[in-house]
Image (cartoon, rainbow, N blue to C red; front, side, top):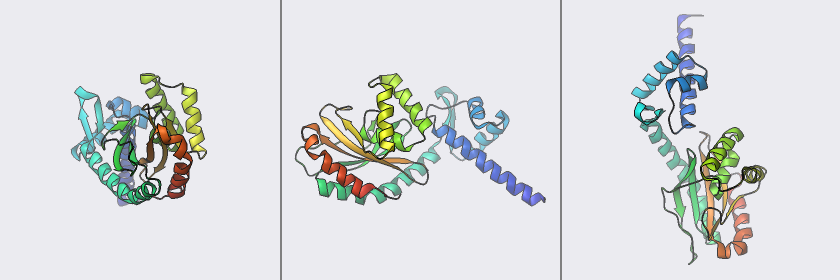
Length: 246
């Protein structure tokens, strides 16, 4: 093997290891130490230190010992925002069709760490309607978009996030959440029936884009008319969203 080929292989290896480190940090929003990263990606600490130093210079990693250690940096966040804008532009026409057909508000959220972050909304035409603010974040286990997101992610990660959230709030039994998520994996739409906010119910559907980001569309409605419209909402969402490509 020639020197040039060796350099090419080494370059590919560095890229692969850098990607593993970035993926690891993406799963731990509170930050990790060099030793923790090394253990999770199965690399020597010295190798991780060199890669982290290079990624820090480029802005892909932020290192602050006073606030949890090493975490994703601003450059990654900028790239993620650009990707989210692109996905939002593709999803918005579908949201508009659902809103026009049903008269209900349609929300778009993205999985942001262990929360769902609202990034877009089509306000419904009903006089009595529910409206959340863009930029608000919501939990996973008691919202329609959160449950839908849990159902499309890796099951081990989903269980980890469920346990963490229930450990903090304990709003629902673990077995109940796991049954709900499994039913959604089998094709059911996610539902929040007065769970997160009394008087508000919602139906949700989630999808993953080629980069691995998870988006969820939900239709929140006042619970006073939820029973009357839920079948029509379910049919409209399935018709417009099944098979949507990001």
